[in-house]
Length: 206
Image 1 (cartoon, rainbow, N blue to C red):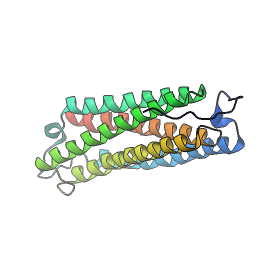
Image 2 (spheres, one colour):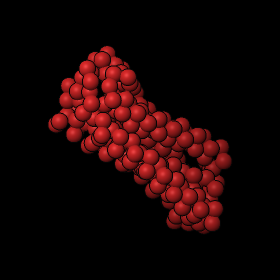
Image 3 (spheres, helix red, strand yellow):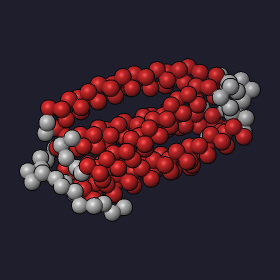
């Protein structure tokens, strides 16, 4: 995970992501984008809550969900949120190697989350919980799968940024990109906390 020496400005601002007008616009624009994403996820949550008791002939949430595994998945994603914070702190200190290393750890944890989620879905299918089994299963896979797609996108995005910083260095152009990717990562972590509570905990306690 070593990185070549990179040139950074001698007068490196404390918040390089906001040091230029373009950078500030990127941050503001991305917050507006996340507002739209929040509305979309809110719609999926509302649909799930309306359909979660319509299990038809399929298994119920209490029969399906295994909280120890879900808790492990949740811990992995929360730790990845912390490593992304460390990456941004390193960026603010213009410690490029440390920033890249923390981003790589974040990506690895993201892959671990995705692997366990795929395993979870395969187990559910074997237990008769497919996308078309019931209204509950359809809403479950739509919500959780949509979040999983966001995690996959985040992993790909951060991986591309790692390669870009290795090639072009950390500067006032690449810094805002790294910063907004961290905001995105925190957003999908927060969404997962709601999924863990609304889908899994509420489903398990009935």
